[in-house]
Amino acid sequence: MRKGKPVPTVTIDGCKVEVEKGETILDAAKKAGVWIPTLCYHPAVSSDASCRLCMVELDRGEWRQLVTACNYPVRRDIVVYVSSEGAQQARRGVMELLLARAPDSQELKALAERMGVKETHYPKVTESQRNCILCGLCVQVCEEIIGQAAIGFAGRGVDRAVASPFRQPSEDCIGCGACAAVCPVGTIKVRIHKDEQEVEISPFKSRAKLLICEECGAPIISMQVSEQALGKVEVNCEEFRERARLCPKCRRSQTAGRLKAAKFCKKE
Image 1 (cartoon, helix red, strand yellow):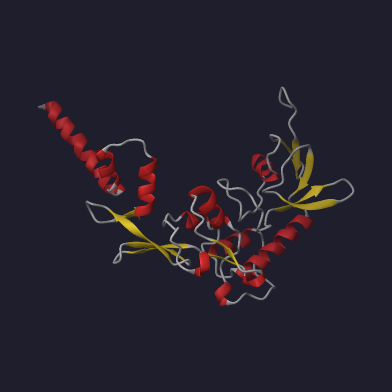
Image 2 (image 1 turned 60 degrees about the vertical axis):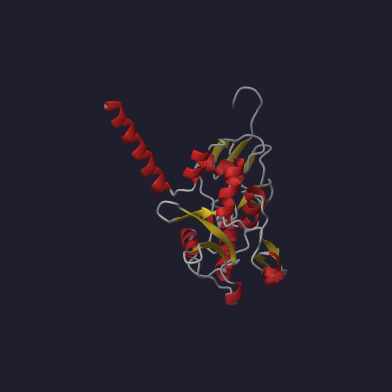
């Protein structure tokens, strides 16, 4: 026990670990070196436990309760079972449902194999509904981190999907690609259209104009992202803004050229 205020102890599969009050079972598992599969969890956004893949058994004394590890706060000493048959069976059942939803996802197949799930016994969804597992990470990162809310949930039941408003290309999308970066099953893709000098976020069909390197013509980022980034920078320097319009390779080349010229001047 640490000095000062007592901290909760989590016993995970017999391994005891201390955590700060309010930390989750998943946090405790990471400290204990116990692996719990997750899909909808990301440290950058709030945890909604929408995928249910991180379920573990919480010891309630005379009975055990299935809880989601990613958002269950630890406020007192608890005993948790990750490797119990009940917990593993629950997670395998969820994975089979996810495989039926996104049978073509290589990322999901790799995770399923690690969990010991080789196939699903459920009927696969139609082609139009396939691939997205509705974890909501893309929606959260777009709203909570980027601040655009360009996508959201639409429809109900089996027709529920992540989409842009009215399923049309969103004017609020700035083409940053954050949604694709956090997508755990690779459903969202960033596509570069060089001829049109645009970036497309698929499957939402939202497009944004690309900022092109003024030296080599390589695409850098979307113009909206560049404008927002420059708007948050306090340095009002034309040289800084000029370098921002160069790709990383050309910036490095320009810096190397200046350093070389400076050394030559010193020798003179």
